[in-house]
Length: 227
Ligand code: DX5
Ligand code: ZN
Image 1 (cartoon, protein in one colour):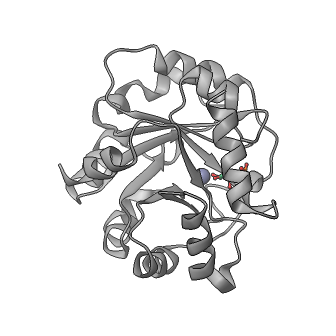
Image 2: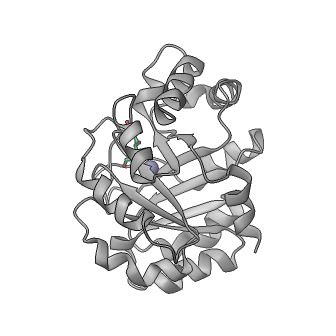
């Protein structure tokens, strides 16, 4: 399955994925180079539609632009209503992994299956307010489970510790082949409990992009994750 390649390429962690929400979009290529120099091996892209979440960001053209300047895996987090309408477009733009929100899909199993059939790895995300039981049907067809530790929509929100329990529950299962990712409010203090709970991929926005040196920020975050 081609989509699994990206999962194997990045490995089971800890992997830090910078969220390109707060980066300098006027100098995207330079940002990517700086991140690469900081040891980053994959990028997390937050696509928001102003409907599923109040915020509006970017779509296929930015994925396409990034694809042209890097071979790093692109982990695309769709925070959009009825994501099924755009799966093929994101595949064509160069996404390697496409994560859809459980709350935004009428039929999560068929959406994830379609993502896989388009050659991408398939991720399912859930918001902090979503009951963990609702994710059950998705688990048999997911390559990645994204536990949101803030309500999807904005960078810079405070970490919600209740997400740790969800991660712990998912990590304790022995029937899954999915990667566990956490996203939202991760920083030098919160990254260590996320790792301890079982998170493998760690999405980080402010704690990288609001720092003067990406390298120093990534080194410190990895040290904290491994502590
Ligand atoms: C929130 C996004 C996150 C966010 C992370 O909806 O999915 O990826 O940008 O940013 P921080 O690390 O600042 O919470
Ligand atoms: Zn995200």
